[in-house]
Length: 138
Image (tube, rainbow, N blue to C red):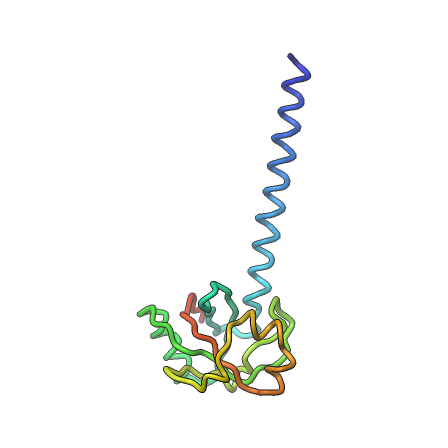
């Protein structure tokens, strides 16, 4: 009977450790996705549920992002695509971040789509993501 109890205890410990590592890895992964450099930043979430940080310099754009967060409206958020050391490998250049109700269809993408074909989007320059403002930090 005692060996059976020991085996069950070991299995439980292994399962708890595996689950803890998975939760921790997911947490670290989500932090990297929203990497930012300033004290004023927003997290946008696209239609696939992917998230990234945007750090607009323009006060008018910041106000629009705050309003979108408050009312839960989905709009196009984008800017000039530049390489960046985050989960996605890019960000929207802070001085180019824009919010738009409509954009040219050829500029529309998802966060993951931009990440997968980063060179295409770097060459194109601009990209927009249909997104909700998930969080505001200031």
